[in-house]
Structures are given as C-alpha cells and as structure tokens.
Image (cartoon, helix red, strand yellow):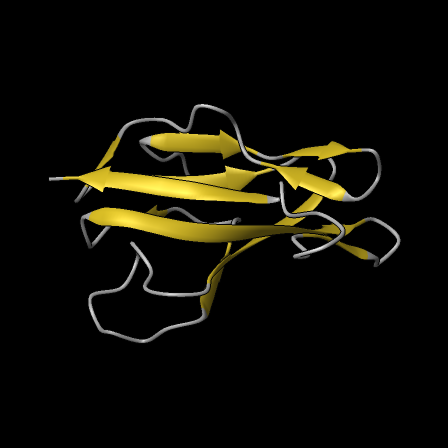
Length: 109
C-alpha cells in the first residue's frame, strides 16, 4: 500500500476524456509531500515548464501519482494531467480537446 502524503490530490475522470484536478487546489508549501490518486486510472502529471518537485531547471518533466513526492520549489507551476484507464487508453490534457485537464500548482514557502 502506498504511503500517505501531506496532500492527497484526487483526480476525477469526466466525460471519459478529461482528467480534472480539484478546484481550488490545496495550499501547498515547500517541504510538504503530494500524492496524486484517482479511482479511474493511473495518474501522470506533466509540468511543461519547471516542476515544483525538482530543484534543477529541467523543463517538460513528469511524475507518476502513485508515490508521495516532496515539493522542492516555490512558485506557480502549470501542470497537465493524464489518466491511464483500465483498458490502457490514455486520456487527459490536450490543447484543443481537453485543456481543462490541468491547472496551476501554487507552492509557497
């Protein structure tokens, strides 16, 4: 069983194609941990610019939601959310078909 985190963020599947983050997102701080989960599939979060889970300047990184991740950087981070459904189909962020499958992580000090 996966361990718990300071923030457990539940991703919802809507209309069979949207991977929806909670709105509002929880208030998060550097040093806390985050775990993404969904009853609908396996979560992947992609950060097209910088990631709150990295201290380097690597862009376009992703993390799996299964294990808690520590927040390492303060700021506002755009994210794109994806779900791998039971049958193997990947759904989530798409600039035209599902731009709501994402959001902003606002991480304070």
